[in-house]
Length: 260
Image (cartoon, rainbow, N blue to C red; front, side):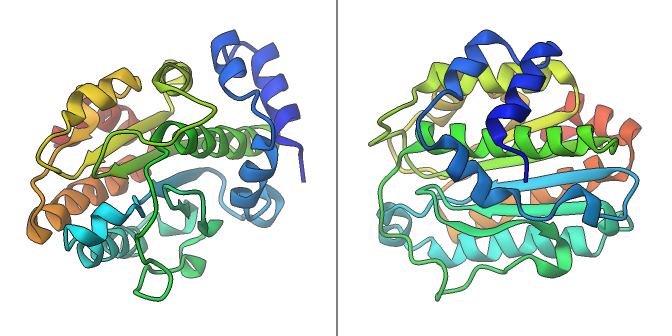
């Protein structure tokens, strides 16, 4: 298995990663955290091109206190179901890592993706949004780079989910996340989206903009279960569209959640 640091160094040398992004990725133990999400090796994937769909559900205590745990489980599983029902399902790899760092499952084909349930998702932790966004986006970049080195084109669709602003990040800030997002968007084969569940006080558009996420890829549903599920449904439609072809991906990336 390639060392993530080597994958990033190669991307830096080829101009795909900026110095600012490399600084954001230069965190002790980051490689081990990323390694936990890399999963299946490109040599074991038969598809001639792949789409990496990556989700980071919030597992902070406020999700539970707000009565939204089941809605988040349902929304995550709805995305997996929509992808599994798509014509392109053979070329889709999924990965879910919770906001506090626990890997539900590393990158794998959709049949191996684990559904969220009450046993594997009990939100009761904090909100290290910036720290874990760097880990997650680093994992997306490393996986994409793995496939590039194997000669397999990849496109990526990533969703960050939170019902609060950052609390408790120790090694990264919003600028670090923005440096990664900026490089990803420049490559024109990555979509980075965010879903802010209304907590009554956080300006999620401001939080996500500071992290470099474009307005057209920000969802700000209310806090009811039906609104949360509906937001996941909107994301699932975008992920399915993006997986159809390079042309569909480009149109979806430009159009955001409103793309036809």
